[in-house]
Amino acid sequence: MRLNYFLSETAVNLKRNLLMTIAAISTVAISLLLLGGAQILQLVVANVTSTWEGKVEVSVFLRNDITEGELDDLRSDLAGMQEIETFTYVSKDQAYEAFKKQFADQPELYEVLPKDSLPASFRIGLVDASQAEEVAARVDGSPGIDEVNFGGDIIRRLLQVNTLLRAVTLGMSAVLMVAAAALIANTIRLAIYARREEISIMKLVGATNWFIRIPFMFEGVFAALTGAIVSSIVVLGANELFFSKMGDFLVFLGPVFSFSAWEITKVLLILVGGGVAVGLFGSALALRRFLEV
Amino acid sequence: MIKAKDLVKEYKGTVRALDGITLDIEKGEFIFVVGPSGSGKSTFMKLLTKEEEPTGGEVFVAGKDLSSLPRWRVPYLRRNVGCVFQDFKLLPNKTVFENVAFALEVIGRPKALVQRQVPQILELVGLGEKLDRFPDELSGGEQQRVSIARAFVNRPLILIADEPTGNLDPTTSVGIMRLLDRINRTGTTVVMATHDHAIVDSMRRRVVELESGQIVRDQSRGIYGVGAR
Picture 1 (tube, rainbow over the protein chains, first blue to last red):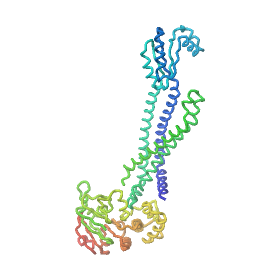
Picture 2 (picture 1 turned 120 degrees about the horizontal axis):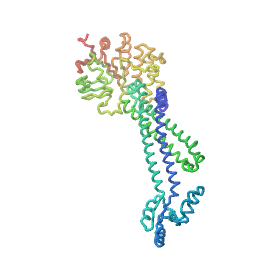
Picture 3 (picture 1 turned 90 degrees about the horizontal axis):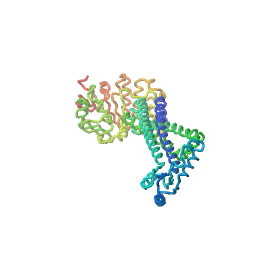
Picture 4 (picture 1 turned 90 degrees about the vertical axis):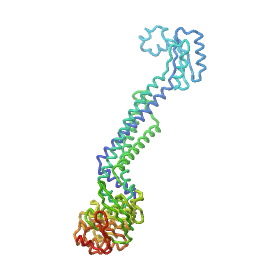
């Protein structure tokens, strides 16, 4: 009977300020969508890095004047390093052949290239891609080496961009969430104002503070949860209709935009949790400031 | 039932509304608090329900020291103290029945009890036939009866009435006083602030007269006061 009372009071409050409620719900939905976007972005970057990490290799380019002795020393050094899984020697000829193959449809490119212009190199596959930088640094000092490259640079830059993007999205989401909480607080304030007579009589006859507060808290949480559900539906819809079809447009985007059911569920849980938090925060704000009990 | 000791209430700006009130009210008493406007009657009443906090002194209501009563206990205090006001304070969008039922519902009383007690109490105040009317369909006297029913439906130990007849004509007032007298005879302590001479003189109950926040007279079976006549 109590729950019934609270629910019907909440419904009356919501109906009375329909427009305000809708504004609060939409703000919650938008702020949570940004939060969801940040989560999806995180998943995309995780997919990208895990796809690319397997392909990270350290390339050690050798000077043309490297001696046989230096080459042998280098070979045994590499064989002794635990971080290295495999390494292969690519001679100048092999490098040229590989280049020719890569640009087979653009003969003008390799035709102008002198046959011995590409350096010989070692191609090193790593046990753990994150150690690329370290391995590169260790090899770099050895004699006969011209230059050491590793793909980690791209990943690092990607992670930097991701950190920045995430910070921006999360920041915007936070600002909007505060705005949403303020809107919820204002909606509740209007409801409190509309019911001030009833509230004063409730206090007069000895209704407990929580009994008076709960319908208003429900109102705030309801608005926020509705916003969370709206944003969840958008995220789910985008995943079904858009992300999962990415591979059809551009093959390499397929794996990048494929998320497991659990990953999507986690995003939705974050949205609902964020919504409840915003709702409770907004309600608490309104009750503290506008409901003297 | 009510015990006040050296009660002082100052409002901001050095207005001393109550200036050392010491007063003992026994269980089952009917007491009038009289005095001109601004003498501190309403302030005294507000201290009894902890609607206001005293600046100094102590007040005990129903055995509880209000100054040490935590905020969350205040609602439970108010369940023992019914209140009636000059302006009735009824909810215009609720019927007579709903107005009274509201007082029970919001303190979590079960529905069955509400359904049983509300018609009973409305019968007692003489409104048994008007359960479904709205306040604006009733006369002033009838509205005050609803408000008394609401204050009494929970059987409080104390009933506080602040100028309950202030908006009513003399004939209607007599009816309201009969009702309060009946409630008093059930053992409920009644404290009524008024400046209605005729009522005080005809009832012949204890009279406490306030002037500028001080008790200038405390008389059992008193009248409103010679000077005021």
